[in-house]
Length: 267
Image 1 (cartoon, rainbow, N blue to C red):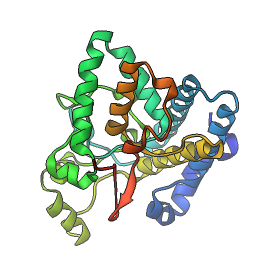
Image 2 (image 1 turned 60 degrees about the vertical axis):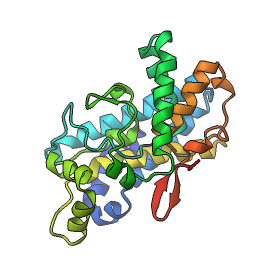
Image 3 (image 1 turned 90 degrees about the vertical axis):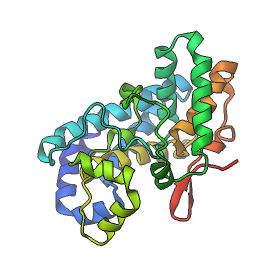
């Protein structure tokens, strides 16, 4: 649970009292600090891969609960199963979130299907290498885990995916099918963005708090791209060398800023 002094009551108060400040940075400091402290406490009890999956579960559960409390006060959103317009961009993930997704995928698939899945994800990761979210939108490059417009890892999806809500489906469709024109209209203020800010802030803050807790313990606090990182991890599963993986091995999936946008390495 979130510490009482940093809990949802303070979150709601801070969001309402200084919305412009928090919206500008899309960060809610009470959530960030709460997740940081909670993750630090859990890391003190164990830092192996199994413990990191447990920490990812805890952070996601806590943040989901926080959003559930705030949700009734927020605008209605149009998101539904089969709506996947937003699933064509880079997805930032921490190391514990990656391990959670990996654990889910491995349990979901039988051993015989792992090689074909590994190959498919690797091919997809090569297509998105070095591309920004805008470039992925333009080329309609979806997440490797999207199948039939449905998320195949929905139960284990990362924090960033959980924080994405939109009031209007057509807006998301326009961003994918005609991104340049839609973004121009937003800049010119002839169109208003329809993404919900509150959940984005909450989940952003949770991910940052988790990342900072890992950094503070001299662990891997890097932010990776989901598909690119999973391509590397799936190969490790096949080769039975997952336990020896290091941040250097994940370097191709590291998200770094280039010309104002976050991209992975180009080969």
